[in-house]
Image (cartoon, rainbow, N blue to C red; front, side, top):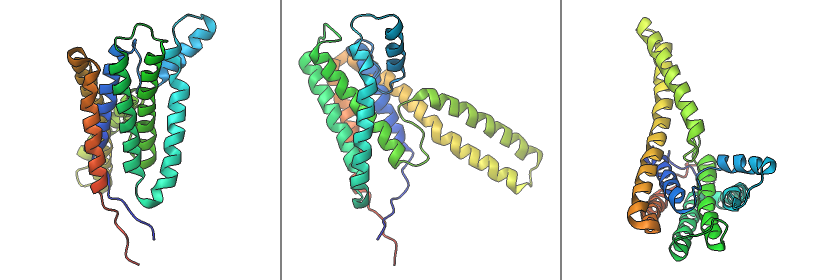
Amino acid sequence: MATQQPPVPRTVPTLLAFVAGYIDGCTVLGLFGLYVAQVTGSFVVAGAHLVAPEEGIVIKIIGIPVFFGAAVATTLLVIVARHRGRALVLSLGLETVLLAGLLSTGLLGTPFRDGNAPAALAAAIFGLSAMGVQSALVRLLFPGVASTNVMTTNTTLVAIEATETAVAWLAARRSPGDVGAADTLAAARVRLFNIVPLGFGFLAGTIAGTGAYLLAGFWCLLVATAIMLGLIAWAMRRMPVTPSP
């Protein structure tokens, strides 16, 4: 018999966006400017390296295969665990384990002297893998939720939704009794209010992560790990709803 999960509260993807920004703020300072929450920069560096080769870029280009591999692993995990209602718990757990790996390698290897050193590469792989898992789990398990990692696309979506909301508001004002116009405005507002918190969450995370790294180094990752543990506890408390036969 199929089970149904209740809708995901808006605070959950916002917290995940905060974690992604927080980790990015930390790794930019601690891992030679590496952004682990997305791999756009890795594609740019890889393409530029083909034209103008340079030394010491391994830590920047490994994001492509690592992110890809993490997404594949998460997809397989979800496929296997979804029918048991454990996909979200296990996916969040996998991300948390990888963040713990980033914390451990960061503490053991810091200060990193070379971006291509094994310890630095290990830390980068843990961070990139964690963010690859998060990107995939949101896509697979949070229907209708925008990315919690990639703010470039989200910025475009905010612009689109804000414009459509403004147009719908003007149409509703011109026709106060038009039910269709009111429904269009309500739907546009929901879409806008669902995506805006992700941007603010990510920005708040980058500010917090940068400041925390300056104060405590890689120990600051305990905050992100604690948030993930809280999300795992929330996911475990969610009881699947089994429809009546």
